[in-house]
Every structure is written in C-alpha cells, then in structure tokens.
Length: 323
Image 1 (spheres, rainbow, N blue to C red):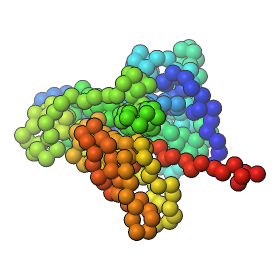
Image 2 (image 1 turned 120 degrees about the vertical axis):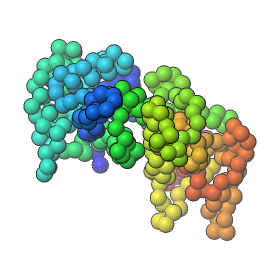
Image 3 (image 1 turned 90 degrees about the vertical axis):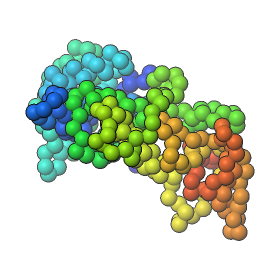
Image 4 (image 1 turned 135 degrees about the vertical axis):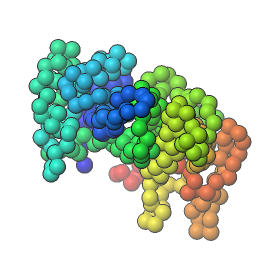
C-alpha cells in the first residue's frame, strides 16, 4: 500500500481539498397530491480530504448545469475549494455507470467552469477506482443504508433534501479520536468540530421507528427515516472500528483513561455514549475481558465486546531493540 498523498496530510481549512462523486439514482415525487409521478434524482457527495467531513447535495438530473448549481450551493456554504478530485469518465468496467457517462460527456465543461472559478479539477487515473477510495467510502456510508431505509417511501424534493441534510449531520457526528489527553474529558473529536466548532445536536423527537407508516404525517415520516438510518449506520460504524483480532492474536489491552465508545442500541440520533476506562478485569487467561467505564451518568461495567476504543495506545518501544 502506498503512502497517503500530500493532500490528505497537509493541514488546511475544511473542504479546501475535496473529492466529489455521485450516488443514486433515487426516486423523487415531482409534486404533491394525487397523480404525482416519480422522477430520478441523484446525490452529489463532497468529502474533505483532511477532516473527512461530508457534504451532500440533491441534484435533479445528470447535466452540467445541475452539477454547477450544486457546486455553487456547496461553495456558498463551505467556501471555495482549491482542488476537487473526481473519478475518471473511462474507469468503468462492464455495465457503464450513469455518472461515468456524465463525466465523459461533460468533463471539458466542468474543467472550463472550474478554471473560471480558480478551482483545480483533477481526475484520478483511468481504471483505478482505488485512487478514489475516500469518496467511494463516503458514498457507501450514505447510499447503502439510505437505500434500505427509503425502500418504497416516495418523498418529494424538499423532503428528501431535508433527509439528506440530516443524514449529513449523522455522518459528520461520528467520533474520530479523543479531543484531548485530559482523563476527565469525555468529548471526542468529530468532523463537526472542524465545521461548526462544536458537536452537532439533533432536535428532540419521540421514537417513531416502530410506528406504522399510516399513522404518521409526512413530517413524521421523514423523522422516522432518519431514526432508521441512524440505527443501521451506527451499528455498522462501531463494528468496523473494532478490529477483528480475537481469534488471531492478542494486542494491547485496554488501558486506564482510554476514551471508548460503548455500544448501545437505544440511543437517539447524534447521541454517542462515551467514557473513560477506569478499571479493567482480567480473565483466567490474563486477557482483559471486562472493564469499568466512567461516563457522564456514572460508572458502568461492560464486556470488551461492547467497548470500542477511539484510539489504541501504542506500546512503548524499547530503545535497546532498535539498536
């Protein structure tokens, strides 16, 4: 595996260097009321190379004009980027993707527009999708669960745009690392800290996940979809943060004051249960199996399988072993 490019490791403002990709299509109602028809729309995803923050825009079609309007909305809210990276129009294999067609037909217009806005627009090499793994992962996080949550629910453009904005907040609330080394600090660093300077919060709402759809208003239906997305995505995110090593080898055990995420399936959207390891309990084999965790509501005891460290402490290396 090669080293990370300089654009990924050089500190700068959020979205100064970013990647863009399309997800979809998603079906949207063309109007309210009876006789409404569904039309294709697309999700335009921007992801920051440095902070990993995500910005979502709903696009009505695959035309250069629709893309330019989405780019203008993005610049108005996030600032003008220096460089935008994108897939190459020729890197499809087998069935041609609609976005690849769009890039192939409109790449010259996009580059000309970006140059007029003093933005560098760069394409990754053809037939090299792994060069765009950063935005491909962002598309997967957004699209995989969103498709399953939406199902046969047909929202109009305004409702789907609202849902995407709330999904964006969910993705940008994910903990990345401890905010400080203070053992009493239970706050994690998230992409939201780079965007708004503080954690994102969600409006208080009743739990509607198990409420039948016919008893919900249109507004409540959007809220139900957001709660379903949160429930599905958080379980996958925490599971991916836990390295699957229990059947292979033992690694560094949990250490006191390590900031951890505690798995809890009943938390509301944008709410993460975090705490600091206070005490560890070893099994008969000498490996940590249970830990006491100091949270804002008190000390709780959980098995290691329910604990996800935000940042593993690296073992100190013996200087003698380096000589």
